[in-house]
Length: 429
Ligand SMILES: *[C@@H]1O[C@H](CO)[C@@H](O)[C@H](O)[C@H]1NC(C)=O
Ligand SMILES: *[C@@H]1O[C@H](CO)[C@@H](O)[C@H](O)[C@H]1NC(C)=O
Ligand SMILES: *[C@@H]1O[C@H](CO)[C@@H](O)[C@H](O)[C@H]1NC(C)=O
Image (cartoon, rainbow, N blue to C red; front, side, top):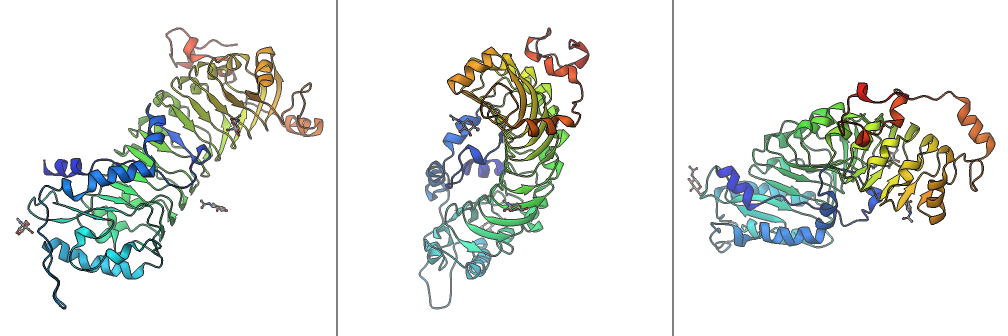
């Protein structure tokens, strides 16, 4: 099918931001290649790929050289280019900042040589030439809106514009772009609610809107759409984590640094036992950690720091045999630090500071001495740097309980039937 060819020519490019995206910034990565992705998707790498994937040398039928420019008459290599010329020029006139002088190249009829624009033949006519992809990554252009531009490029397949200063909302009209399959508008100034136009765009496989100012709810349907990549981190989304995450096909999903509220649905863990990084930090997640967290057998990093989680730590965390970093700092967790978790062989950084733990056994104390386990500012009476007695008693003055308290001692990886998650089969204390 011709669409497929078109897609192959401009295959998926994963890009991240040039700005300081250390772990603080992220995320909830799904897929066992999560770590590789982070390394392999620097913007430098992206540019390299972009050059190969988008360069004119891979265009099968290169447009004929642009005819000489006459006074007022512009001759275009293709009717489709003539159509978008005025769209581009109109957009150019709205650009308020262009520190690298990119738009200086946006003159004349040779649109395929404008910086940031890439031509190809569209799926519906192999002998035509059209603007097939846009790559403005890192151009630092500023414009009050993309409306009237992105939504008016009828054949665009890729739109990559990370690290610019584009603002406004995303036009509902992008839903009508038949070939659009990658959108990266991360690290811009977009605001308003989730760009609902993408819901139901069946061709879309890549949606990166992180580091913007989007607010409100994330429609649950997006999680079951046929996306490979959905990056939502570092916005101001306030949503419960949807129960339907369990049936998602998304390979890479980032949620950190928003205002996600409510409990972590236990179904999440069941579905994503191949996660290498689960980063839920800096949200407003509440409730108790479900024992299903023990299903994350591939997790190397689990970070739920700075939320409002409460309850004890499930002993099931001891199933995370590959885990190197566990962070629950800045929550309202209490009880004893599970000794079995302190026995994990690969654990390098186990941070429980700023909680209300009351006890740590001998194995955990060895980790404290080694500097692996941090329990500062808890309620462990015989350890230094703890909360005051008043603070601790205030906290425990309110009754605390979690649903299914039996489950905190349940270890899914050690139960018979290995990994059987039927609660009825779990031992009752
Ligand atoms: C395909 O595109 C070419 C070049 O623009 C054009 O001459 C031709 O009429 C188009 N064919 C159809 C069927 O639209
Ligand atoms: C989120 O909202 C808070 C205020 O409610 C604001 O201070 C912060 O800058 C916002 N962050 C983003 C990324 O929009
Ligand atoms: C351990 O992890 C915590 C939380 O992510 C972080 O603040 C701290 O710097 C880390 N410590 C080391 C020694 O890496």
